[in-house]
Image 1: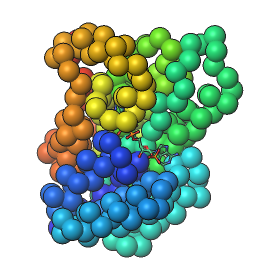
Image 2: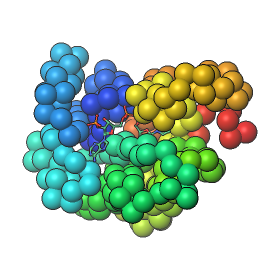
Image 3: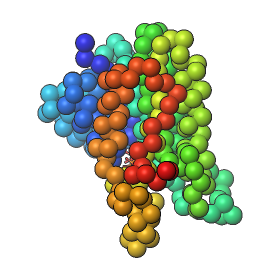
Image 4: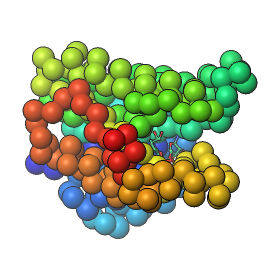
Length: 246
Ligand SMILES: NC(=O)c1ccc[n+]([C@@H]2O[C@H](COP(=O)([O-])OP(=O)(O)OC[C@H]3O[C@@H](n4cnc5c(N)ncnc54)[C@H](OP(=O)(O)O)[C@@H]3O)[C@@H](O)[C@H]2O)c1
C-alpha cells in the first residue's frame, strides 16, 4: 500500500527536496505552505513525477489552518502515515540583550507553536489508525548554544523536548516520533542566517567536513525514517552536521 505523507514548509529548501524524493518513492502527498502560487507549482511538479499529490495552504502558527490541513489529508486519502513538521524560521539574529517580545513571538509561534499544533492533530489521526511516524525538523541549534541566535536555539531545544514527549505519549499507539537535527544546509535559511559571505566562509571552515550540507542529505534521512526502515526508533534525534557537534 502506498503511504500517505504530509509535509509542512514544503515550498522551499529541505521541505521541497523531501517532497520530490517522497514523490519519486511512491508516497501520496499533501504538501503545505503559505503561498498559493508556489504551492500550485509544487503540486504540478509532484504530479508530473506521477505522484498523487495536493497542495493545501496552511500557516503553522494558526490552529484552525493546521487542523484544516490534517482534515484535508484525511478527506483526500483517508489516512496519514507520515508527517514531516519542517516549517521553520531562523528569526532575527539578536544577542539576548536585544531580544524583544515581538522577536520572541515571531520565532516561537513558528518553530514551537507550529510543531505543537501539528503534533496535536497529526497524533490524533495516527492514534485512530494505531500507526504512523512523525519527523520534526530540529537543528544542531537544538543541541548547542549559538551567539546571537538565542531565540532560534531555545525554539529548537523545545522541538527536541517535544519530540521526546510525543514519542512517549505515542508509543502505546505504535506511533513513532523522531527528529532530524541538521547542521548548516545550503538553503535560503542558511544564507539569511549568515548573510555576510566572509563570515559564512569562516563558519564553514569550522565544519569538520569543510562544506555545507545539501538538502538531499536531510531528505534521504527523512525518507529512511518514513519508509519505516528502523521501526524500533522513536524519541531519537538524528544529527546530520558534517561533524560539527563532534
Ligand atoms: N538550512 C539549514 O542550515 C538548517 C539547519 C538546521 C535546521 N533547519 C531547519 O530545516 C527546516 C527547513 O528549513 P530550510 O533550511 O529548508 O529553509 P527554508 O527554505 O527557509 O524553509 C523554511 C520553510 O518554512 C516555511 N514557513 C515558515 N514559516 C511558516 C509558517 N508560519 N507556516 C507555514 N510555513 C512556514 C517557509 O515558507 P515561506 O517560503 O513562505 O517563507 C519555508 O518554505 C526549518 O525548520 C529549519 O529550522 C535548517
